[in-house]
Length: 220
Image 1: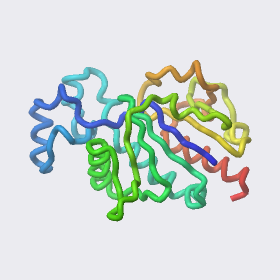
Image 2: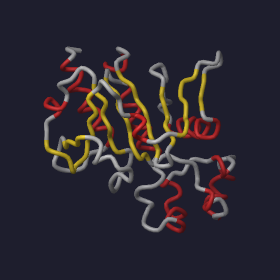
Image 3: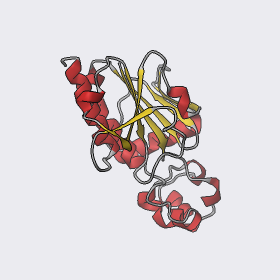
Image 4: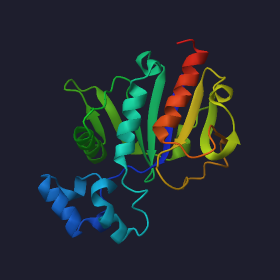
């Protein structure tokens, strides 16, 4: 089994201190949404984020990277075989668990609406009550697994190839869920860290490389 965990992920609703911002109110009105339950998205709220969190607009509000990540990993052979588990820890200490049967919408707008529902209500489910995604309070280290090899992937880690990393049949891999900067959680002191490239890579590229190497050891 391969667990992929995104840590310190920049996935959140619009922070309360931004609720009265004119840009946020306008975006909410134009989209027929309640600004209190709207997803923070730097693609549309770049200026508003910088007004309240100076210099953070390149990091905060990046749900688009999770849309890309989930579509990539869900299309893998590993996931189709039921051998992949995905969990997302947000910087606000929310842990999102995604059922293997969940299919993320290809449309980004539909995906954003789904994430809003998840973060507001704490779950998304099928008409017959099966929970597809859940969101509960929890810290990143709750995702550490006894009996599995826990690995952190970071440009600061020891350089190794994916084939050298993926040598165990049960792997619990941690990746940064952000597009800029470094982990805010104390991950380096608790997990052995490795780097698979000399420079930073997108989270979906890292995930795809690890999945590919893991599929190879299982001969998939």
